[in-house]
Image 1: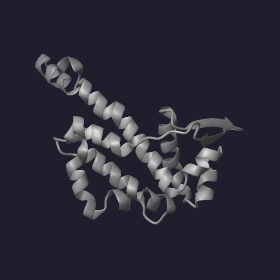
Image 2: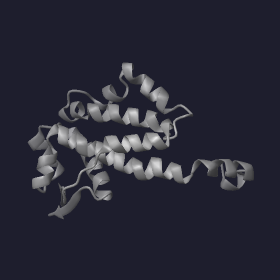
Image 3: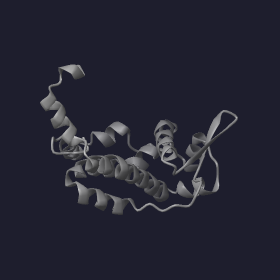
Length: 171
């Protein structure tokens, strides 16, 4: 559908979605929440001390942490996300990206979750799905579960149903 085919009334209805609250919940607090969840994951699996004291490539991290090689893409996505939002440094040495924490910081992503929910309870399905996936990440990184097994676990289909519901403001 081309923009010129959208009625003025539909444009006004669409514009109602993108309020200051929407941007605060989904974007600004969302970035902090996701960053905090990743940082918390790194703490829980023992990766944080390596990043605080060293500049390491994803291959070095995979080797030191005994992760499966296929975890490289997901690790690099998390590293890129954290770097984009100034939580992680990336330097290139000899054509290889090296990652490290550049500063000490604390991010209480559980408090940020509460702030998000206070602004918009309809974001909870997005947070619930992300919490489940983050909790399962160690299994994926170690190779004990595949991404497919985690994402499409039969007993977790309700998370997807809630996520794709029309009342989920994060969707």
